[in-house]
Every structure is written in structure tokens, then in C-alpha cells.
Length: 204
Image (cartoon, rainbow, N blue to C red; front, side, top):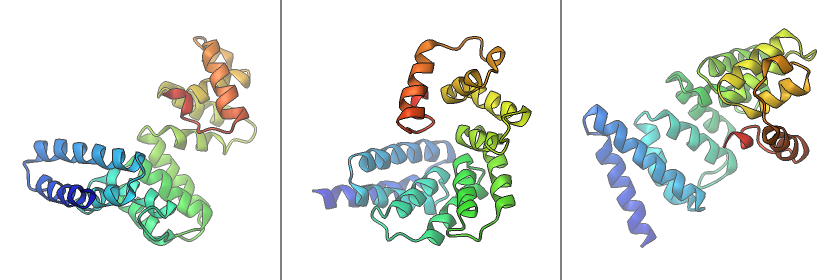
């Protein structure tokens, strides 16, 4: 049964590639949702069978997710260069997460050569396209928590980041976040600062 579902997913993926553009985009989004659902259920082979055709057809979100799976060794053999290749392909299509994760390849010198300037430039591209983690990473370049820090954190707040909002409040930029809520302070303090959770966790 599982083999049949995987085969069907491949057929649907192929069919989606030949639809008119608007319908193809909608079909690809549905397939991507199916792939992510399979991934969340731990069926990595099924997720891969949907993601790879989408990624090869130019779906940048599928490219990024493929990179994640390679990184984690989920239905792929871990290969840092292959992982970063997918992020680069996504970045070439303007994908904000593609820029971000390709930047980390250069920052860590894994899958790409170590290049701090390239890392910074890729973070800029990611942040300019609205990706909150890139904004927060850029704020970290200002160790004094001055105006550059404030600039990027305020931008993250504008994009809905509770972590950035609480961080500004804790750093005495309270005038920048007059609408801060106690539940946001509690969530960020507990889930992120104490338990080292994901910086997007309180935005859900």
C-alpha cells in the first residue's frame, strides 16, 4: 500500500509539471503540503518521492526541504555539498530560506568554503525578502546592541517576531514596542531564552 501511494505521488508530481502555470502552481502547492505531511509523519521516503520531482521542476520550497532532509540523513545519505547545492538553487530563484541556509554553508565552511562576507551578503538577501531568522542573525553582528541591532530587530517585529519584540523590550528599547504583551514576554522568556527553543516558536 505504501509503495502504491509513493508511486501515485510520483505520477501526480509529473502531471503537475505539465499543467497551465496557475494550475501548476496550485497543484505543486498541494503536492508540497502532502510531502510535508508525510515528513511530519516520519515517512521520509514518501516525502522524498514527492519533493525531488518538485525540486527538479523548479519549486524552490521543495529545494529547501530537500536540503534539510539531506542534512538530517532522512531518506538521503548526508552530503554537505549536495545539501548546499539545493539551497543555492533555491536562492538563485529568490527563495528567502534558500539564501539563509546557503549563508550558513559559508558561515560554517561545510559544503562550501568558509566565507564570512558571503554569509553576511546572503543574510541580507534573505532579510530583504522578509525572513525573520535572517534579520535576527544580522542583529547579532552589532555586539553592542546599538542602532544596527535595533534596526534589524525592529524589522523583525514588523514581520511578526515576538522574540525580536521581547528582545527590544529587554534591551531597554521599550518605546519601540509599546504594544508588548505579558504573554509574549512569558513565552519568549520560557520557551526560547530558558529552554533554548526555536526563535519562531512564539510566533505560531
